[in-house]
Length: 288
Ligand SMILES: [Mg+2]
Picture 1 (cartoon, rainbow, N blue to C red):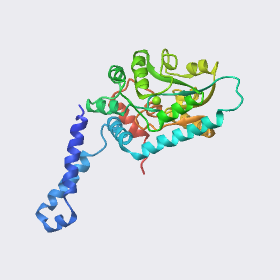
Picture 2: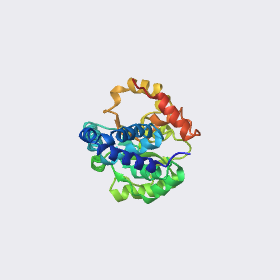
Picture 3: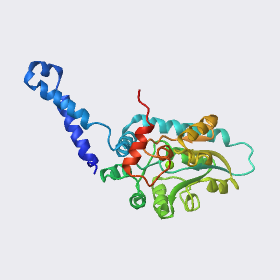
Picture 4: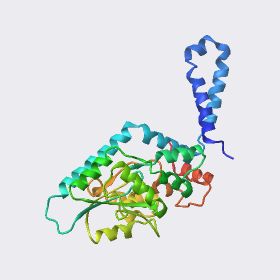
């Protein structure tokens, strides 16, 4: 049985506070406390050994997404590049209407509050709690995203939201997009997952009528099925092969919380225990 995550965080904080109050000067002046301090430090290293890797990772990723100015800067960077692509593509001779295909979650909607609440419950993703979250329609937009999508729309570019949220999530998603002020927030342009998480067929249906000038996503399968359920090494290889497409045709947003990069670690095995997942993660990591 795992110790609840926040109990561990709390015990780590208590230990950290004890360590931080123990300056070298105090150790020298009060030799009687010295061994106790050493004991505390030794105990803390043991307590702080790597445990619950995946769940703790979700908390740290949410911390970064919710607080790091660097995260905001990366979002601005991506949407500034995307704006440049729109400027380059519009205004020329075109036989068919222009469109953008964009993913939703962690491409411009911030679901880190869901990750935090799940971690407090000692859980990762599951469909029931996900629906509980998406039904609220309360996700915030990534910095720069609202301005970008509305700019593209103002230039005559249609936006298609191709998401692996499902039919149950659709009403909440449309409400969320409308409330935030995103363009094309309707049933026709929010295209949810039906039979498969592979987005290729949904992209092809759009490509029959539109010239797609750009794809935006946080997961490489948002761009091409070349990445669909591929191993880590194949994903890396395909990324290298397509290196020139990034920043021109494919715009990537940062997501360190989840994605196929994570699923690929235990070989897309969704039936493994949390302990098996952690074992696979630790096995894949390089130290020195
Ligand atoms: Mg996504």
